[in-house]
Length: 155
Length: 155
DNA sequence: TTGCAAATGGTTATCATTGTCAATTTATTT
DNA sequence: AAATAAATTGACAATGATAACCATTTGCAA
Image (cartoon, rainbow over all chains, first blue to last red; front, side):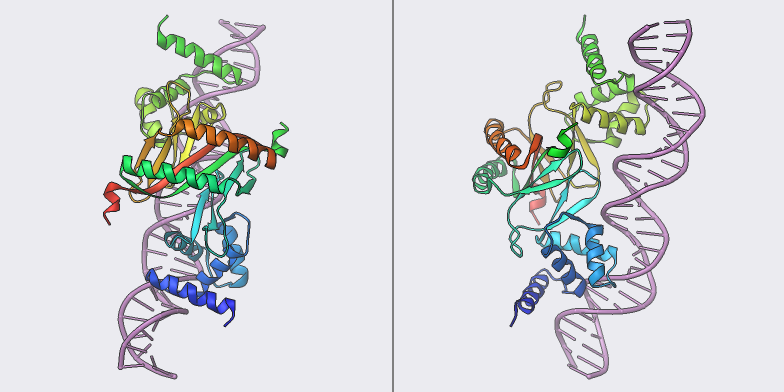
C-alpha cells in the first residue's frame, strides 16, 4: 500500500473522528498546503486547488480552511495586509515549528525556527502560570516579529 | 501651567516632528485612547470621539489611527474577530507593557503583564540573533495566547 | 492676517469573507 | 449495486471593515 493511499485513509479517519466526510476538494486543499512553503491566502489556495480540480469553488476553499483550522490541521495568520494566510499546522506532513518575521515595508515574510527549544520551555512555564491565574485553558500561542528587511531598510 | 495644557503642547511638538499638524480631532482620539482600558475598535473609538466632538467622522478616526501607529504612539491588534483593535503604545500616558490572552470561544480579552522582565531579556537576545541572521531590523514583536476562558471551557 | 499645504467629512468604492439555497456527493444501509 | 439520509458543494448575493475621492475647512508659519 503506497503512501498516497495510506495518507488518504488516515485523512479519512481524521475527518470521520470529527464527524465530517472526506471529499476530493478537501483532499486537494490539504495537498496544496502540504506541497508549498509559501504563505498562501485563501485565494492563492483556491487558484492552486482549482488548477487541479476545476470544480472546486472559492467558497468551498474558505469552508474547508475553517474546518481544518477547527480540526487543528491548519493555522491562520494575519500579517497585516488585509488577507489571512494559511499554513499546515505544526506536526502535519512534516510541518515544523516556526515563527515569522514580517517586513512592515514590503510585506515579505521570513520563517525562522531558531530558539524553538528554548521557546518551548519558556512558554510552557508562562502558559502554566497564566492558565492558573486567569482561569484560561491556553491551547496555543502566537509570536511574530515586525521590522524592515534589508531592501526596505534603505529608506 | 496645568497638565492638560502642557500635554497639549507636547503632543503638538510630537506631531510637528513628524511633519504633521495637531488638530482637535487627533487630540480627542488620543484622549479617548488614554482614558480607556478596553480594546476598542475604530468604530468604538469613533463613537467615543464623536460624543465629545460631533464633527469628527469615522474616516478621520481611521486616518488618525494610522498616523498614530506610524508615529509609534498606537498599537494595532487583531484578535480574530474581523475588526482591528487599537491601544496606546507602551510608554505613552502610562500605558505599560502587556500582552493578551484571547478566548477563542467568546472573544474575551485578558491583559497580562507578568513575565515582562524575563520576556524582555529573552526577546532581546532572539531579536539580536534573528536580525543578524536574516538581515532584518526588528522593531517590535507580538505575543498572544489563545485558549478558552472559564465560561467557555464548560463545553 | 494671509496663503497654502495639510486635514477633514460625507459619500462611494473595494475587497475579503460569509450567508443562502437548490443541486450534488458521500458514506451507510438494504 | 441501489436506496437513503445527511453532509457538502457551487454560484451568487450580502455583509462589513477599511480605503479612496474630492470639494471644503483648518492649522500654522511668515
